[in-house]
Length: 70
Image 1 (cartoon, rainbow, N blue to C red):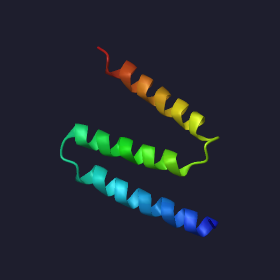
Image 2: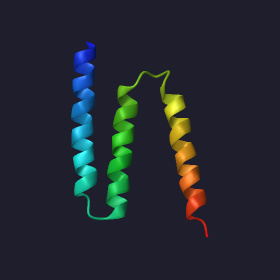
Image 3: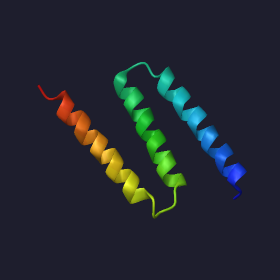
């Protein structure tokens, strides 16, 4: 695929998923749509890049978990 078509596909995914997240009414529904967005982006990546993204996402999740503790 050309760079132009890859960019167009990424823009389309972003538009669809950000709209779903914004339209969600409950926080859990927003989280579910956000995770679907992350998984869609991971599927579109090269396999070699996925472990680094998983590590970053896991780090953010750990950080959010630590912040939410009393």
